[in-house]
Image (cartoon, rainbow, N blue to C red; front, side, top):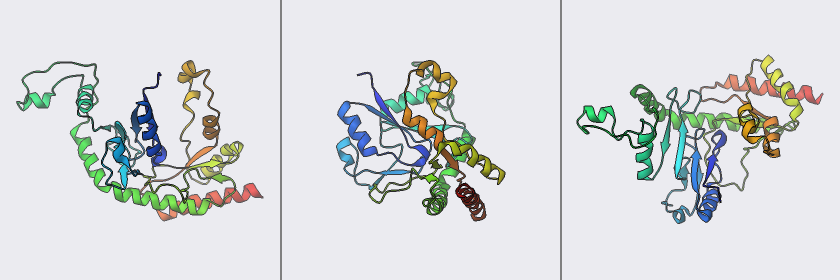
Length: 278
């Protein structure tokens, strides 16, 4: 088979069903790469993880630490930020060594190593790039890490307040409204997306919210519809992706959001919903 691995996206900070994904990967000999760009601090409930070669003593496993590789983003709008940059995590020492080479021109040692006498020279043993993060951004990241848990709790409070107010409004579906039977995973609540039941009302809803001073976003347009990917995906048929991409709207959510700001958003939503029903 041509499939080599599974790329898991913990979209919006909401953990995927990693138990099912790891079972599928193990059954077919596939690698698992976790895109945890939205999910620092999020965690998956995974009983019985020992069968995948991992310690199963913990109830929750951080997103980005379960598959073969975890990828994090520290862009300015993420739950924790260094302005630009990111992080790759892995339990594979050989892969970690290669990743360190790839981030620095494929070189076997860095200028810092040679300056401090740890290496007299270097070799270039792989294709590589300059993906090195600088000390200032790293220091910012360490400071951000200290506040991540508290910031995620604030995000969770805002998200739960949204859910309490919106779950009974007929115009919306809440795709990440937790089911009573769902595993007790932990979201980082990077995004709060809602689905409009009628895709034709999305532009009207967003325009109304804009007039009330509320910014909404679309996370995300369907990738296979972008011009660049049309060249290689012209025959791709993804009706479910197309449907969701036409209905999704993201509401404001950030750790510094004040109660009165959150109230303004909800008031605007209720006003639009009342006008629509009139």
